[in-house]
Length: 312
Length: 176
Image 1 (cartoon, rainbow over the protein chains, first blue to last red):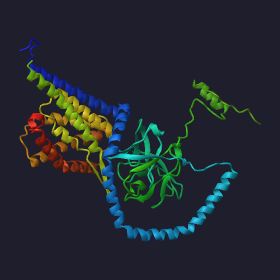
Image 2: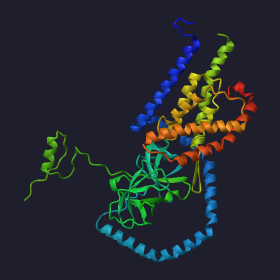
Image 3: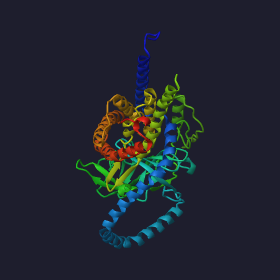
């Protein structure tokens, strides 16, 4: 027996128990911290993403091949029916083509006359990336891209597939970035109907069809409406196509996402700079004397305030 | 300390790190997912196999630390709630330790592995529920568990090949 009264196996047993309990406690603390949305080990996540993107880029290639094989087989099976539908659609759209071109020309002329420049929010530049892994588990729907700060990717940038909006960037590493997909539980995108311009928020629910929330009574939403980003909030550019409206049994609106039509491999990123929110303390432009007085009374640091002279 | 004892001690410390490296490799396989038509196939429970076959001769204390790091890496790589998989793996490791499993054939190994996956499934479901504040999609989680169990025979076969080539499993410290 040792001096401390414990024999060696007992001491070992105690130290094992101590380690086990400590590690479980660390896990619980991390879980609680993550629940509080604290960015614990944020740099660790970015480093892991950088490593994963390199390795996944290599080992995901055969998987993407298998997916494409199945998608191609499906396409071939429906080729005849699709061809008939597409021919009918081409016939129908041919009439609209000249009308659209005429409208485009007229809009451009009006924009020139009003000195508006390009009225579209969509940037001309696109950055191509590869989605090396997609996590569609029960908890999170995200994807890892193989480019990051090295290609100028920034948090909040919209990510597109050839079919429609995929998601937006939530974290950027040196050579990788993570996309929060539209159907993730924490995804919230301001959208509108392309037909009626009715606004709503697209809320991810970890299923294939996210829901429309904050739909005001009396707004005009119909089955089959094309849903696009509204650009409200200035976070994403306006007009990125997302999907079409479907109605569920409980009369709630859901959106069939375009990007789910086929396996996602190559994507592009729009380097859109969000519209900055004016700081409360800096009032640019015109402010009234009452606003200034109110801020001064609240003890705020007011800078560069232009107060208009009293006019008759 | 005799040289044999010293070698054995070094080996018992190196084995958990071998387990950790194999575990990290399995995480990348678990991150692979396939969309076949409208069906999404994921293998998020695949790393459980590493805990199931954790080296028996490994130092217990170092194993605990390596299992924790392995789970933490999985949490980071899968962008899931931090600590979720780390907790599930740690508890599973502690539950599996000491369980007497003889030289088991494929049938018995599948059942034991399926039970391990089920155990992790329950922990992950509960932790995910508490963390998200909403019950996760049980169907997706079950699909992932089923896919991970379905590929187990392949992993069993690879391991059997490895042990045949490298010598008996006891010399490698692998669980029988």
